[in-house]
Length: 174
Image 1 (spheres, helix red, strand yellow):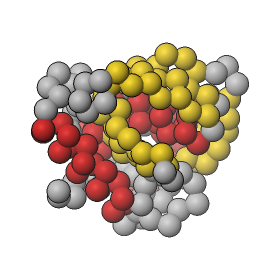
Image 2 (image 1 turned 90 degrees about the vertical axis):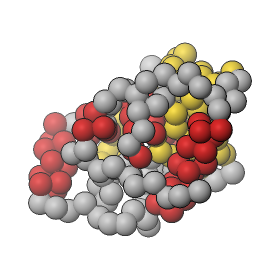
Image 3 (image 1 turned 60 degrees about the vertical axis):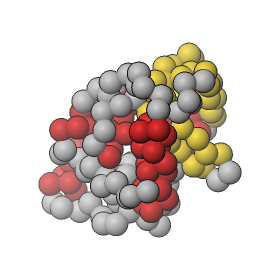
């Protein structure tokens, strides 16, 4: 299983909508395994296929003992109640900003074998699920930032302040 290169902000693949997965085969399972290995190496919480240059609707996560893969995810429901917390992204190493997201999320999709799967989350887990779904739709966490925070994020990116490699951050890196 090889490590996959994580695409950084500016790579056009991050702004593209990933295609629905139609083949639930060894290639898909190998991709999910390689993404999980890459996630571990980067010390992140989750990673979407776009972030490794693959335009397929799949993401993997590991939050403590909670780990898995979700393919072709869609939102069933999100709470009206919101949370505001620090959020980071493996494609923006070293950048953390307060990001408002729903407190709870309920997604459905399938696993890497094509079997139906539902994922629910609250707090950090909801943040992770929605962050990764955004990636699959070509939406980045900076798109959710308050105007002044987005301006500061872009200033830091232009100044070359992204960190390499990822690891040791305070907030969830998804």
